[in-house]
Amino acid sequence: MNKTKAMAWFIVLLMVFSVLGIVGSSFFSDDDEGRSEYNGFSFVRAGNQWLLRSAGGEYYFQYLPQELENITSPGEITLDTPKIYMGFQPKDEINADKAINSIGYVLYNNYKIVPQKACIIERDCPDIPLINCREKPGIIVISGEKNGYTPDEKCLIMTATDNEELNKLTERLMYNLVGVMD
Image 1 (cartoon, helix red, strand yellow):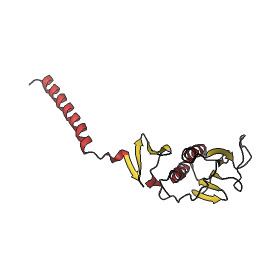
Image 2 (cartoon, rainbow, N blue to C red):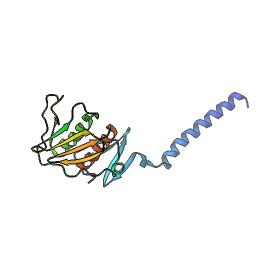
Image 3 (cartoon, helix red, strand yellow):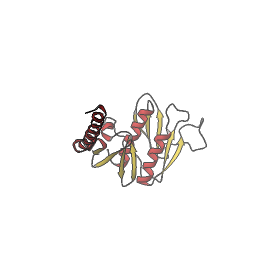
């Protein structure tokens, strides 16, 4: 047999075994890598995020609920209101916009509560209201030295050391609002 025929047979066999390997691996692989269950809710991998479809809509998460179980529950939030103020501190070290938008999306889709962006201080605040936790319900996002939730009159304060921790707190609160976690 000459070299050309031997090389051709080698390439044909290599291609056949490659196809068989791909087909065979789909029969024997664990398909759970792209799916997860938690508390009766199903999550499906969508790119680099997890998709949850619920009665309120579709929600994308970076973390699965089991990855956030170590974060203490945010507690009670006022949900019997037509509007909730989403407070932040202008020029803060963390970027509150993503958290405010994500939580606001859940509040509107699940409870028909209109989120109203607000400042917690007047200095450097754009033309939006100031939040007053004694009078109006709200969720406040600020940077701090510890991560967690603190109730303050009619508000819930989310304090995060950095943007990654803020994302975890945001998703933990979203899971609470959607009913995935208590």
